[in-house]
Image (tube, rainbow, N blue to C red):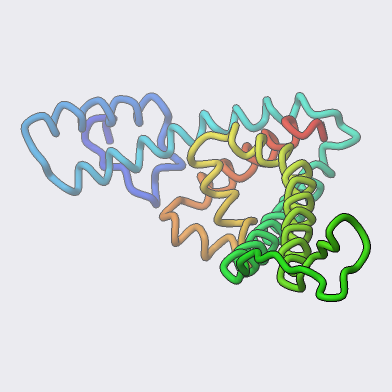
Length: 217
């Protein structure tokens, strides 16, 4: 069999030499200039993904070499724990924001009231029950806003780290860890329509990148 006559499939691609894959890839590209054959397009995508995955494997191996040996087996569970903490903080912030929204619509009107007996102070002016309710409401809102600020400060390191990820990495992290129930890897692979090798590569690089951003490694 020559490098020009064979067809690449999911079954044989792992055993095909790289120079043959490159030759077949270039040949299909030329053929697709004059054709939109879906079988050729699928074969082209298969080869492209395989070659990219091989390059990605080298990238992961290099990234792992940069991690100190003492923490090489520990960074992933630490990052995953921090991601779950971040999700809980997100939920806490949403709850506080909801509480503020439930208070504000019922805000009563402020009206002045005068003590009929006189009371202490100049002119006997006192606060009405309505004014006291308004003040209590604003104190409660201030307290919730202060709590939100504290939560946001705790969230910031992970928020910044997630924003620094590439699109595919960020999407995987959000759909894997930032949910109430963490989906199985196989389920997420099907949803994203990613090959197993690509899924675990993107996941691993994302966790390493987060670990570096958070100064875990």
